[in-house]
Length: 206
Figure 1 (cartoon, rainbow, N blue to C red):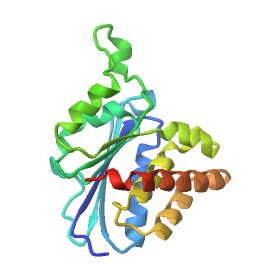
Figure 2: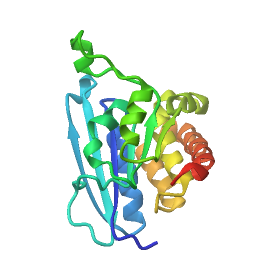
Figure 3: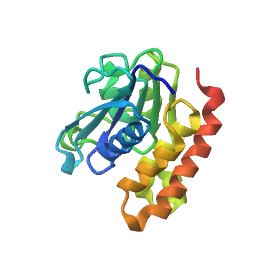
């Protein structure tokens, strides 16, 4: 598949496997013979701080950072992090939100800041794009056999929607490359559960 440029932003907090998502997708893109550029930013990642992974791949990719408004896909393993990164959202962006909140340090440390309701997060993002979806990634990961596979669930969902221009074979290879050997089988299950969930969403995409 010939793609000029494709931009994926993965966001969440430390310990959720955000950078691993970017590494897996970048590996699959390389195996599919695309030019690939990546970058990452960390807050206090070991303490639940914000983490972002930037991936750009295609025939003509000039740098790792995604221009404002040009994210094709945003994967938010923590939903509020998608709102924090709204500058990357455009009308054509597709946003997948894990429906499990993890309170950031700013809320823990302040009695005045309140975590917004999911409806408020959804409303904010839908001001820019209608393609915003909550995914029960943690619940589905537990169904797969390990709650820590929620990031692989999200990868499966993206692939299942049909919007990700990467081959299933190379995506699977890349998942197995980056997960611990003892967790290979549970991650295979998680990936397939995610694909099934993504396939259900196809009719809802605009």
